[in-house]
Amino acid sequence: MTQSQADRPARVIVIGMAMAAAIQLFFLFRSNVIPLSLRVWNHRTLTAKERSAALAFGSDFAGFMRFTADVVPADGKLVLPRAAQDSTLGNIGLMQYFLIPRELINCPSSEPAEQEACVLQLSGADTYFLAAGSFPPASAAEKSKTLIPFNSKWGVYAPSPR
Image (cartoon, rainbow, N blue to C red; front, side):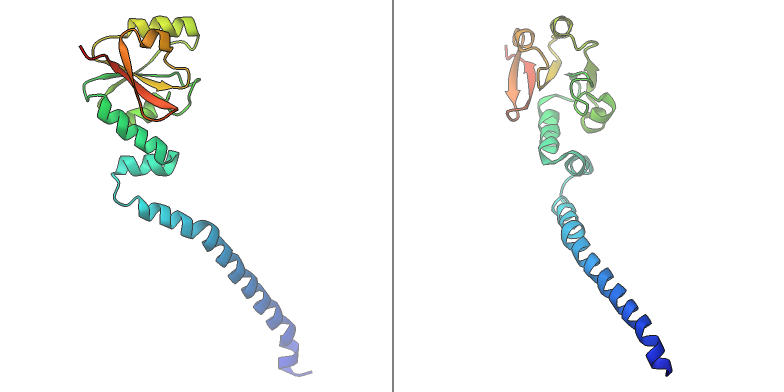
C-alpha cells in the first residue's frame, strides 16, 4: 500500500469536516450575524442611550424613553410603577439611566387602595406619572393629571394645563 492510499481516509474525513464547518458558518451568518449586524448598522445614528434602549429592550421602548424625556422636564418628578408590576419600567436604576436628571419615585405598595392614596399624595404641580398597565389608578391620576398617550400600552400623566 502506498503512502497516498493510506492517507485517503484521513483526507476524506478532513474534507468532510471542513465542508460541515463551512455549512455551519453559512447558516450562522445567515440566521444570526447578518441580522444583528443590520440591526446595529440601522441604529448607528442614534445616541448612546437610544441605541442601548433599542438594542436591549426594542425600538418601542426606546421611543417611549425619548417621548418621556420630552414630556417630563429635567427638573420634574416622575412616579414609576413598582418593579413587581413592571420589572423594566419599575426599575429605578435602569430608568434613571435613560431619564437622568429627573427625580424618579416608586409608590411603596402595589395594593390598589394604597397606590391610589400614593398617587393622590404625590399629585404636585411638577409631578408626572408613568402610565403602564394598571399604574397609576386612573381614578386617582385623572383628578389632577392629563394622560398623554405614547401608544396603547404606555403614556405619561402630566399636570393639567391651568
